[in-house]
Image 1: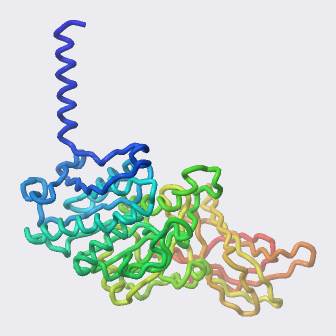
Image 2: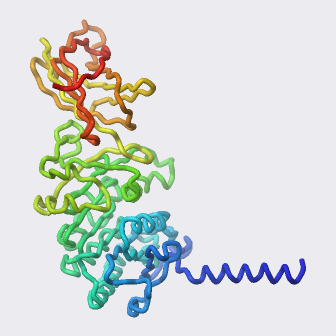
Image 3: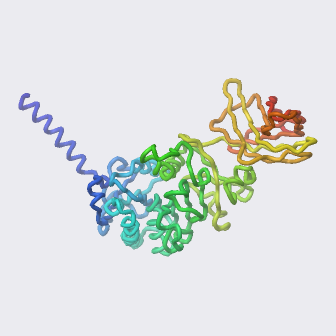
Length: 448
């Protein structure tokens, strides 16, 4: 290799190295450090629209000297949770970009990996208080420089949700908003409100639950609590321990991925206020008159159109179902049946929608349905995809009767209402005669 070529390559290497040194990255620890245990050290990495690809570590006491940081802008803190291996969260860059797309803001990634990275979970739990004290002091300094607590949003994941709660409590509940993504359950299940995230920690608190039967926290802890698939097992996540690490973390991590999807507007996750997931699946909570004209709450960044109503109501539970993969959204219909049959029958409903090329099926089996003389029944039918326009509908009522005579079931009316697309017409059909366990098809008509 010639000396000239060597010097050019060396210059390029030094230039790239210099560019890297200008960026401050999330602390990356190895398993050895996590095994030995880490001591708490909190860093703040600043991202704005001007430096989305290059984080800048923000000094705690001289942050006013950083030209990219403007205390008059809204500020969002992103707070990660327990890191048993010490590796950075895989979603940090993604959430930074998506938050920057919402509005012009300061995005501060709270890097407390030295403190969260520890095989001893109890040590990480103990470090949540110290992390909160550190960030609280920084926010108090921001306030002295002219920042408004109303414009501060804390987004906490797992243990980070409780860190956000502690920060909010230390600031007297004056911060504008806290979002908790599946707040950690172990060590917090029986904690008092002062020892975990609760609605008094901010002016508005919204919480998403995805793993309440394992690493997540049960109950209601915000002004609105979203429960994806009931807040328990998530579709697509492994059911046996033989799947390895994914078996333990999949349900818990799903909260982050659902929130990222909502921020990206890739999926519209409409939630229905209800007392329980079973009541939601049974079709008992499919109207949101309380929230008119804003309609049902939608998971995501902008909660302004529902905020006042939720604050007035107190604590609200809201449920939705998802698919196993992106874009997670299900297409939902409210199905109203009026039956007129001579004999009482129990069964489940299988509904199919056709558009000429594709067919979608929904088996409504959350509980056995009662069909008798002149009975009105409301159901929730959910489909993994959306097809439109709908050219044909088929219906089957499965009773489990396999040896006796097939009884007839008469429908005086079936009305199908699209929930996510209320501008689309309702679909009806009148006076249908069908036999149990047999499928009947019909073309939908406009409702009277």
